Amino acid sequence: QVQLVESGGGLVQPGGSLRLSCAANGSIFSIYTMGWYRQAPRKQRELVARITSGGSTNYLDSAKGRFTISRDNLKSTVTLQMNSLKPEDTAVYYCHAQAPWYGAAPYWGQGTQVTVSS
Image (cartoon, rainbow, N blue to C red; front, top):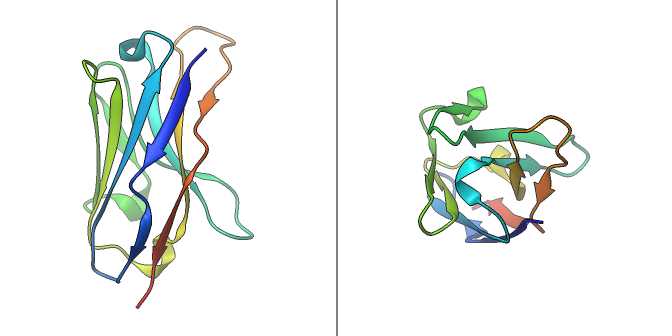
């Protein structure tokens, strides 16, 4: 069992920055692929960024060059640094953990609201 707790959301002006953090407990954090998803009103949840246990990353096209995902296996945390935020980044952001073995159920955090508005 993995528990994920996000923090760091809020209201920011266009062009601003926010840093989201996700703290995990309950399992061997280092083996999990960690990710950040988001869901805007009336839209499907989408993957924003993901980082594997080996440190490989991939990003939503619109996030490339603006967002950076990182992990600290000693602290069992994953962070999403978001720069140059745009109104279209407004969404609830969810932390996600996926174990590497076949058939493993994913874990989700409770979500944190990010609002980009002037």
